[in-house]
Image 1 (cartoon, one colour):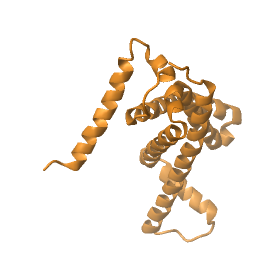
Image 2 (tube, rainbow, N blue to C red):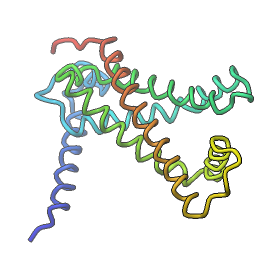
Image 3 (tube, one colour):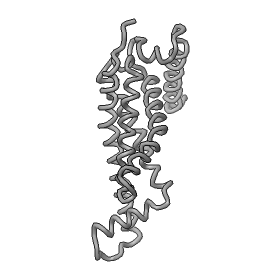
Image 4 (cartoon, helix red, strand yellow):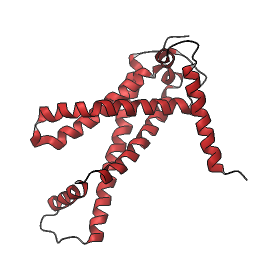
Length: 201
């Protein structure tokens, strides 16, 4: 008896592979021309994966420079705010650029395409948000400082209570990241796709 999970993975892989092959062999056209203007029957899962991967790569390339700009503009006194603003502006610009690049595919099924890309992007960002606290040494200390600021003079929490507080802090961070990805991703993709309407083939 075949494993249904394995069959699902194989099906997804075949979908992605077919989409990549179609892009690479797009009747001699370059890839950007295909993504901008080439029509198709319907937005495929592979197209969504490529769009999300592209947005993630763009975000990774511009997040740090933008963070430096906002931190420099706001000063070290507002370091946290500058870094946060840089991250959200980077996410919006990445979605905007992604919408512009994939305008042709998005226009085939406008709302459906934008919704699917945004949801997958938010899922990816949510996964990243859950990983980030584990890789930042001072994350737990920051959560403790937040508790002390919110409840000055409170008794020292037990270990179990600290775990619960840090889990709530991580859940809040994930909520903000996913909510921001849904909102900024949708708006960015919509505006970006509007900047370039696909030509009829």
